[in-house]
Image 1 (cartoon, helix red, strand yellow):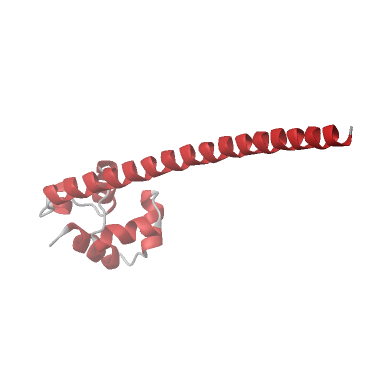
Image 2: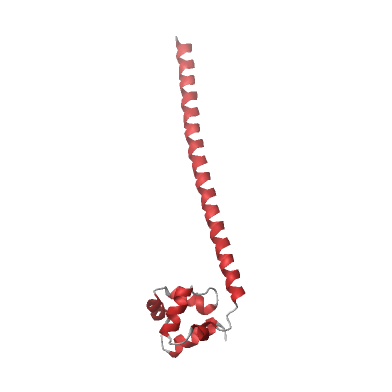
Length: 125
């Protein structure tokens, strides 16, 4: 039996909701849901808390977990985080460029306006 299946079974056997278990482990209901769906895994501290809470050994809790799968998921999460950070940096750079181009545009507009006014004044005089 996989970790997510064990967790779901143990939680239901205890008659706990995802929210109640989350409160015990100081995580959100959504986090418990992701663990039970096999979308993510708890960190080591939470695994220890789970084994203590359900009064089972860590070995019993994590036996049959595909460690390589966890590594790949963590690597994927790190890559996604890195991509989001890169996107945020590019967004900030683009925002700065737009700000500076706007300032330059206002300067050119102001300068052009002054030249235009001077040309009109010369024609009048």
